[in-house]
Length: 436
Ligand code: ADP
Ligand code: ASP
Ligand code: MG
View 1: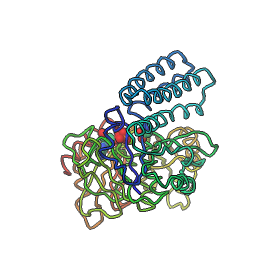
View 2 (view 1 turned 180 degrees about the horizontal axis):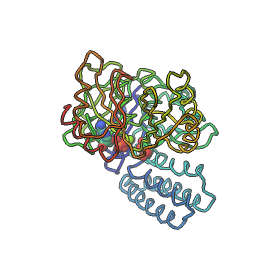
View 3 (view 1 turned 90 degrees about the vertical axis):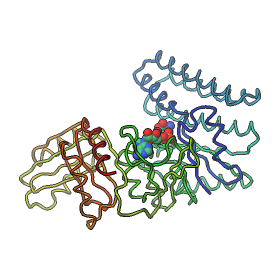
View 4 (view 1 turned 60 degrees about the vertical axis):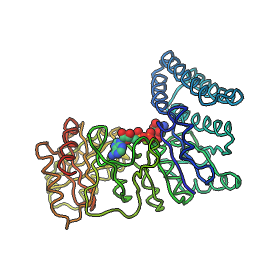
């Protein structure tokens, strides 16, 4: 069985939705994961932020505006009266629900419920559309089988146990549709896999049912060798290993959710990145093997904070790093990059909610310096030691840019540089010109 995930732009208009059947073959057994219609989740985030600030009037204005766009969507997607009425009922139900939430106490728990509406609406409308043209499908409620634990980690065995019976119940059906992004947390509340999380849903389902392949259908022909929003002339990469793709996704290549490669990698499910607007383009295949001997791609992740701990007591002291890492562990703050010298250690984080407490504890060890507005630039490729010369090409390309940290040798397939965010565009362009 294959998993096909379609992102926001791929379901972004009634025309796009109807064209999905050029890609989905209703004769093949598959699970189709849909995102919200593009722009919807951003609107829902905005609505929630008004409600969290108790600005009910602005929230209602935004809710009405979004509803109006869906009224139009339904009228075009479902021209036959019977189905249009069914679609309209769905819209009225979801937007009535949102308007009701605006009348009550609004907390981050309700916010998650608001954010879930986009995928609930898109999948239901698509299901009604398929019915309207006589294609049989089953709508699977992701909230019944996608679950995260108290550390936000997904529970793949839970998905296996709850999804397989749902599929087996419908042995006569080929086409299953479900929501990306949404899940339940350890309290049973509605939650989500963070922004862009539909990719993660697809990979988790692929892992849970040991799918033949996961296909991520989006608005570009695969993973490019640099960020196409910033650099001109980027090109798609035919093949990536799981490690390479994971690194690029984690360090900012927006085409994939940062965690989405891991489940596929663990269960060895190949992932293809494909273009809905150009279905014949080969796209990118992510699998265990990749082509060696090349620099593949460059990605950048903003919003990084660098922390330097300077301590003369570190000199020759064993156990020092453990004590430092324990502080980050206690505050559930992942470390991205790390470099050490005899007297200092520098590291970078992107989750800064607990920064003040972390710094207060680190000050017991020595002087602590903080730099905000940093960016990690990550160059992914074959950096085995015998490929000498590649690292120097990378450094040569950024010799005119101040470097805060360099990380090389942590793996065989990446070099990461920490720079000021204001230098990012120049760094990406210069690396692109020198490396490709
Ligand atoms: P979807 O809504 O289908 O999930 P996204 O907007 O999340 O789509 O991801 C696709 C976008 O990712 C592309 O339109 C492109 O602008 C951006 N992107 C950033 N870096 C890369 C990259 N290295 N390769 C391809 N696309 C990238
Ligand atoms: N709709 C969600 C978002 O915009 C999930 C996704 O599109 O992948 O973040
Ligand atoms: Mg996305």
